Image 1 (cartoon, one colour):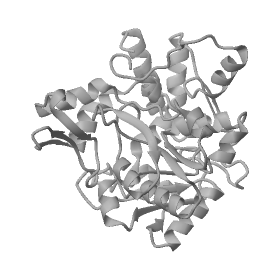
Image 2 (cartoon, one colour; image 1 turned 90 degrees about the horizontal axis):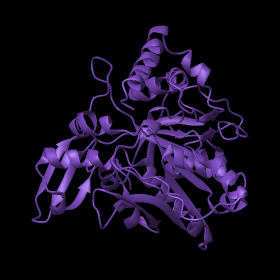
Image 3 (cartoon, one colour; image 1 turned 135 degrees about the horizontal axis):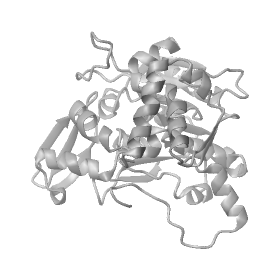
Image 4 (cartoon, helix red, strand yellow; image 1 turned 45 degrees about the vertical axis):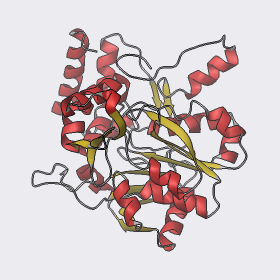
Length: 376
């Protein structure tokens, strides 16, 4: 962990040229290459904003408790339950709260419903679910992997040169990601709640309703909480690491299934964060994902309704805007003399064409100005 609260890799031994090459070809901070995952082999094209899709819809878990515990409709959690109980996988690698530091994350092994239930809910702070990949691959049995879109893209990249991954990981799930806030951002939430970090024994960023509250549980058993609009909108969204702001795939293109909040729009067309019954946006991107979704639906574990892909922009307007403006942001980086990551197979020109010239100009000028002012 490095200030202001991001996880960073630290080299602790010499690397061979082969290891250097393996890192450079898979690290999503350097390269995101989805030419062989975005619809390839699935008989699909790829939408410029939302990626490949065999099924697009909204839905929720029929398990009311799990639906309430999760951050939206509980679809990812319910798919994991079905994957375990159907025998597709023997365990799940997923991220939840750290037992020692309640505001932090820890990646662990889920083997049953109770584990999945405990891990349900968004965790808006740093995580590194692939850090122990080798240990997961060496364990007996097959496993499902749940991670950020960049984590899944990295795992797919490693699978190109490590055949164990496709053999051991039959299911990869992702969620739409708005970026990783710093741990300092969580500290600002605690400060706003008037809470001493040493008194916190439990912390939820969301969930326990939709969208749910950022909730700190204290040693005396009391709770302090803040709305999602305040915790994310006013604090955490302002603490994002820069790399996330130029992410070309924040929607999980490389996953078998990716999910998000299926927000309802208000009168102005913006997502409303009024508390409601959880509802997930669901995109099955591969045949594996589509089949598993159908099985869970047939088993009565999920309820889904089809959705036109164009409707996603109404539920996730910030994700649409980010993808449209990636090229203009990269152009600003080039002018500022900053190194550029390599993006392949992500239809960035087609996405940019969906924005207005004014929008692109503002995106370019705004980022370049921040570079010149030394704010990045």
